[in-house]
Image 1: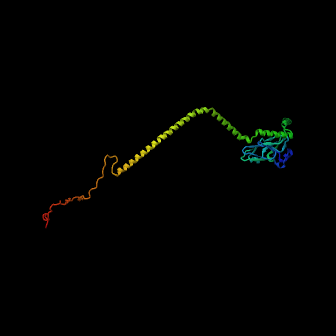
Image 2: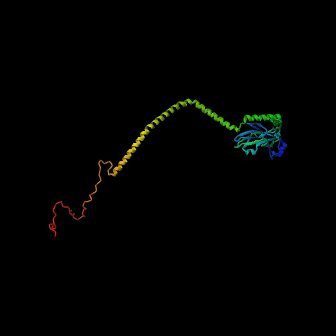
Image 3: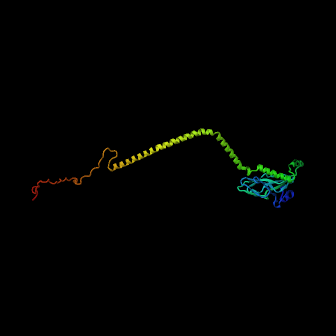
Length: 310
């Protein structure tokens, strides 16, 4: 059976209890001190839990004295979970426990989260244990050595020193210290790579140097060939263009003067007929005898001699 808030106040002795943190079915414990891996032990003030895996350890301000017939269960507050902050090392609060509660708070979010002394970080529910059987006394005796004993200054000093040692030994700047792991893996792989290169360095040089010499040789030959062939190719191209131009000009001249390309002699164009040639008669009529002028000094006959009338 789970206890309600008013019953928790009656049956569980809580040193430093705050009435406003008694809930309907649980009690909220608050931060009493903070152990920051970089700043150490803090009993006042606040810290920023870095984003993406930042971690701090907190100890409650309340001292709980749990009866032997009750057991508590601690879980992180929902308000912290909504900020992507989770609590590690929480769970069952054993019957007979006397002392504070502690947890490691990890920020899995993408922005820093502030934690102050006095902030509630866990809520604890309490449950009734059954009465047990005839072996109840034997069971109590068996587990009596697990009970830490009454809370006093010596236990407080020991508890604080133990939590600090745990934080320094096991807590890094971030959860699982991902950045350090990545750096270590990268350093290891780079060392292996350089070791392999060092071992095979001579083998690489034995084939790299001859290869470089061959490349330089062919580059030299190629440069010489370009310098030698380039002007010759330019002259050949110029001569070919000149021949083509001459051939085109010659063909144009041959066409203009009526000369067939490739003939061995010239074929002149026919001359036009003289302008004073007689016009031929129409078909079927005799051609008239043309009259010619008499030669100088020749006597001309008169009209009667030609048989004409006077």
